[in-house]
View (cartoon, one colour):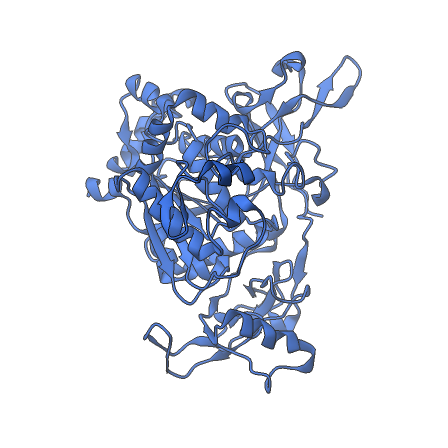
Length: 547
């Protein structure tokens, strides 16, 4: 177990809190010497690299057996292939007409080992005889094996009226678990080199280490930010009780099974966290009535970094992305968030009216440092607008913006008879009507303060990209709300939602939808593709205007 001590400042209180970091419950793969001698996320394939003691990692396919090293390392020491595929290097004409010399070739029945006969069935099901190669991820053991806790300010808590906690009586703050490529964000370290904050949300497996690894490889592939430590990657982990961390009672956890699976995807409140109250002679631990929405936790994390101009003086871009369940998270979060990190929020406009507000990208680095050096910390946390881009990748479902759905070949509002059979089709998480199986005060608050039409327009004006894997065509069967009203498979659901969005806002939207060809339900392939890199790192409208 790795223990890391870090100091955290909570909101505007002058309070120091000690946090410990714990080993991720998924564990690590400790790679053999012939596979590099480094470490990789759980169930990954270890590959040798040109650097002794450093291993490159290939992500684990959800179709593969539950063991590590099911992929294949390529001889170039830079790439690899997933379960069921071999490295190939000859020129071929692929399905989209593009010639490619480096790819992964599906193993045939004659080449597959008897112990891997299921490989053949996997290839037959996907119909992909070739796939792109993975670019190997390389990260330190510290990055992959250390989970930090970000303390959530009380302004983002939800408390029971009859169980109000006085902040000055408690030594406790609930904390969002996260992994990072640059260590604790609450250390005393300055992050003067950071230009990009890259937040990546894991899928239903809660494998934040694997997503951190994927994001790290993407940062290495892109060519826009090439200086050392210019991209800070944070991978939040929405823990369940089953994930352990008993020694960290303040880490926020969410109900993973009730009333629906993976409640954190939809902005649900956490389970009440444990408090540690101080008395004259001892400290007492008890369960509080305090909860935090998963969306509010991300709001707090982003606000902490975006508005800290002293430690992050050169921050010029925020990227928030998620794949699969993470894609569901970021789509709904970007629809309902009213955090001041968005320059369209009421709280941002209030701050802007009381400060000389300039887009951060319009100031030189020296001007930014001088500006922040003449303000105290709280003042400096309110003076800049940093462009935020959201990338939604291969979600299972979407939150629709109106009652309309595509049925029987046409867009229509379902009849009363159909709605009576599936009454929740337009309730949260599938729509914005009242009701639904999951109590979500965060979403309710967004609707309370915004008319529905205003919420639609605000969402349509935000910088949102949708990534859809062309081969993400696995037939999905889960509920009438999904299956009857959103499509049969993820690619179709993405197609239909984007059409719905354009119809609902009459094409008045900044949103874009990009298709990643020859890729199915695979977060690493999606982000490493040229299309994925464009979605993540291409200039925003604000950046183009400044230029």
